[in-house]
Length: 139
Image (cartoon, rainbow, N blue to C red):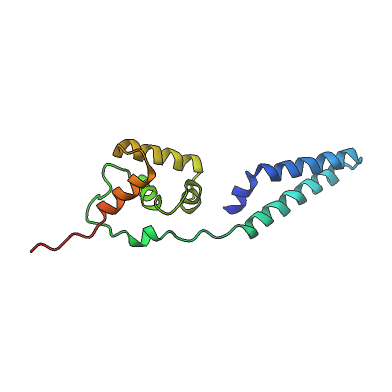
């Protein structure tokens, strides 16, 4: 999956295009141009996958104590997943963790804010914390 993310890297595409143009300018045949372009893309993807730091699992997921029923109402299950991760992660990190696009996470965050009538990410995190606070024993 990370390789697919690296393929969307505009720098890798620019390097591959520059390599193809240089090979074309030097008079190489189509096979050599293709091989050089693929080699640049593979090297760039390999470097991106190897050098990317692993994303630690956010502590918010382990700290949330799910209550019975739909604690996350009026949110959908996926919006609740995003809301739980929002405290310790950026949208990009959430997207990578949930294997979604960053734009999808942006939409989920906007929907959550609209449904909860809040204006800041911190308010979403506070809402999740309040909803998942252990119930106090009755005296």
